[in-house]
Length: 280
Image (cartoon, rainbow, N blue to C red; front, side, top):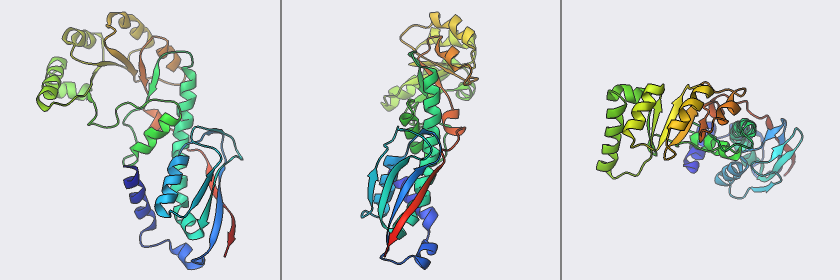
């Protein structure tokens, strides 16, 4: 999947050639460039950068000084790359685009994980990702200290409000989901979203699920219902959760808190790839 994403991105950016470099940089020119950090945060995408450089030109040499997950500050140098000047120029923007976004996600994730320090609740991402590069964004969440929820539609059954409404209610939705797994032989967990205590009661009566998502419940509402939920069910809180309130949600004792903003409302980290010198 990573190779496919890299190949598609290179095709999108280079097309029939990097004509700026082809026009003015000699074919045999050798150069060196450094990845300069221009913001404070958590670095992510270094391993991916190595993969991009090597996939485009296996002769490029990369010396890593700061690996993924490093706490960085303005002025730090993450790595140096040396080799064909044309190859460095052709891959520069792709490396920066991915690393800036991944570092922004890792930084924000790390900040929120810090707010949960000392508690057992795990921070999850969602499917609210950029189409085509979900793997990279969820990778960045892990680098930042968060956990991945399901990757896509195929690795978990998640019965949300629209599924329940289309199915005709919670009971038929859960029963059909279990029948589907039995008929297909698939081994997938089932999660069901509940919007109020009445729906929660329905789920607890029916059972046959692995995780219950309490959607838009307040911390006080969660505290009130959590003692009624047997320990065999994982419990996830989602919706209406902010930086200011997330610790209160975690203090209720839920197993997971999912935050879509991890991958859709982050600030990219400012990074730059600077040429050191060129040797003809």
